[in-house]
Image 1 (cartoon, rainbow, N blue to C red):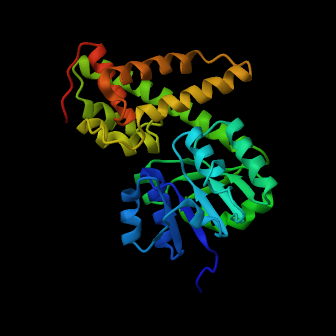
Image 2 (cartoon, rainbow, N blue to C red; image 1 turned 30 degrees about the horizontal axis):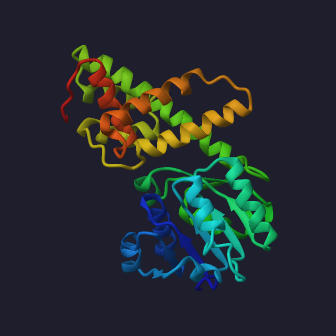
Length: 298
């Protein structure tokens, strides 16, 4: 039985495209839009309709949004020609962008003033993890809105966690990314010590991945670490943005963040060295260079 809901998708970058593809592959009729039209080509070939403008999505029952920054989210959602402009509006907006709670609350307030339900639903995972159905979504907003779209959320991801009313899911995702940045820096440091001391990188990672410290994320990224493959799944520029958001939230809550503050400076160092658009795992190569060690693929 086909799903009669009209579903739209705003933002088909690396993550947005992977998430939208999960819906397409499940049989959902999907209409997509992206500022750079070429980024919709793969989804179009998989059966998605491509909207000429955001206004074409305003009559959708549900629109998913995945944008890179708070400013871009505000532009496409509340700006002139945006999703909430004009007289027609979607019934529900599900936003999976990683943005600060203040921006999220601003979009929510405007949406609610126009009778649009708004669910904040950021996601954990990279495009490969999303494609494999192993990502996790965390949502906040009205419970009844979550219930209406839970089946779609679980089509995209392995798990969909409801975190209550308001903007709690934004803080969950921001804190998640702070933790992720700390982990990649810690991993970079210990791998550098081991390798510079004569232990093959592959042997060290084989050991780590067979201990309690070998998380799913570390195991999934080990082939890239060994090959020095920094093809972007999540760029250092985006990680820096999330650290800025996280440290701002910590400042507002009067929480000291000595580790995160230090890692932000290391992210900035890597960006200054030319790694801005590389995968954030490239922090290992920067760490090795700071130790005077040239690394090679293994």
